Length: 242
Image (tube, rainbow, N blue to C red):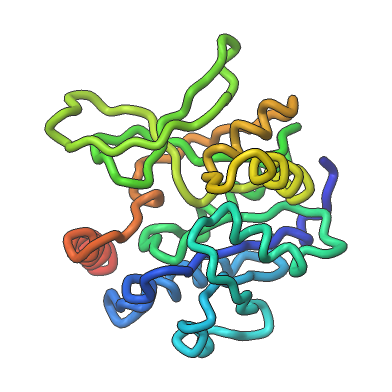
C-alpha cells in the first residue's frame, strides 16, 4: 500500500447506550482507557462517533487529536459512511474500535499498525483462541489457501464449548479507500449491512485481509452488561495491583 505511517487514523463507535464507555474502572473511564491506548505516534487523529443527544457527555474528551462526529446511525457500517467527510483527502489506514473495550492497549494498537504496513494487505484482524463466547465475537472462515474469506458472528454459552476456538473482534484495521468502496457496494445491495458483510465484500473484490495472532482474547472483550463490567473490574484490578 505504501502509505505514510503518520497518516493513520482511528474511528471509535460510541453510538447507543452511553453508560458503559463512561463507567470508571480504577478511576479511569473505559473510553479514556481506549484513548490512552491510542496515544501512539502512528495515529494522526481520532474520530469519535456519537449521537447528537449524547454529544455533551463526550465533549470533555475532545482535544487536538480527538474530534466528535455526530451520527444517529445505530449500525457501525452505515455510521462509517456518515463519517466520510472526516476522511476527505485521506489515503491511510483507519483503525475501527467500539467505545466499550476495557482491555485494548497501546501495544496491540502499535502491533496492528506495524503489521499492516509490513504486509501486502488492505486489512488486519486480531485473532485469538478463546473459551469465552461473547455476543460480538466472530469466527473466522478461511478458504482452501488459509486466507480470511469472511466472518461469522456467533454467541454460544461457555458450557457448549469444550475446546478453545479462534475468534476475532474489535479493533479492526483497514485501508480507508478499500473499506469505503466495500461499504458502498454492500449498502447498495442491502439496507442493514453489517461490518462483517463489508469484510466479505473486500475479499470478494480480490483484496487480502491478514490476521495477527494475539496472546489472548481479553483485548477483544466488550462490555454489554453489569456482569461484563464486574469481570473487567476484577481483571484490571488484579493487573494494576501487580
